[in-house]
Image 1 (cartoon, rainbow, N blue to C red):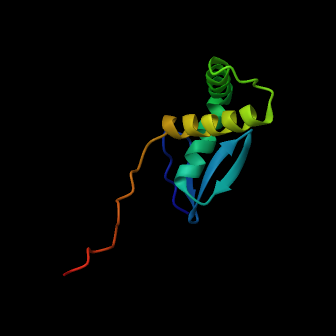
Image 2: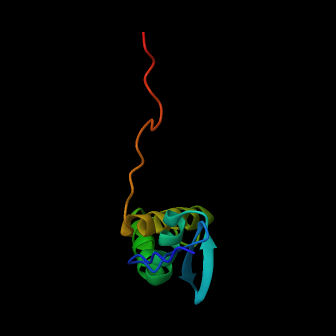
Length: 99
């Protein structure tokens, strides 16, 4: 087991990534998923409040199905934005065609 703890409480474990969510340890396939889940667990109330405020500013009924879907996407994005970023290389491993 690799015991690599980052600032979000994510631990690499047997090729998976563990994070505490809702008081329980859950395994994720990628570090990014685990970090987003840990951040979301810690800051969900704040993220939901921001997302609802955004929807209200756009005069959406936050109880509607469409607004709830939009709120979920915004909350997921805020959790992603709060975490560390690893930018994947564009076209990694592919060489341009030779003419």
